[in-house]
Length: 264
Image (cartoon, rainbow, N blue to C red):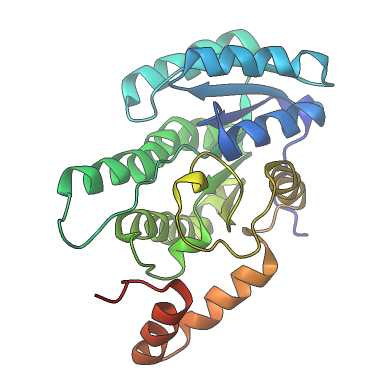
């Protein structure tokens, strides 16, 4: 890879948001297995306490703090306190996200806004905490968890897909500047991973991956340092190909593939 910075365990802390379940939890544990000291943040204190206990036998360690990513002031306070006592955050995985299926009718604006507040606003709050201090150090690594759902618009995912598309474009827009600052910026675009989030789906999930496998792929991607970490490759390539098709062809294929909306 290029000469862009890639964090090592001896450099400082790794921070994972949304670490109480799913990809965040799996990635926090995998980083600890690889020797990192991990700051795990989430809203659920009980789940974080369990995570710390599970990591006790690993090569690295996990410290936990209860934080809601939408509370920018509290999050900054926690990061200031942790860096003062534990050292600098050199790797951050801005992962926290939520999902609910969304319908065109009835349309739920409140849920739509909530998804954006967490999925996009939470990342923005994380970037606000990280970018200036990493720029001052001249190095750092930030990965934003988006999704292959951000490549295209998918049925019943208007809020989720568009929030993840926003994250992908945000990362693309910031990338040139962060390179110049010595900060490695990455976007993680997972496909279907078996987590509490995907358990809400009532549609086919092709190439569904186990959480441990996905966590290893993500951490391998951190070590390589390339801009996009995406998996499984089959689903990623299929969805990227669909972006190239004329809209009428695309919509026809999506209707056939998802069976949505159901025939009346």
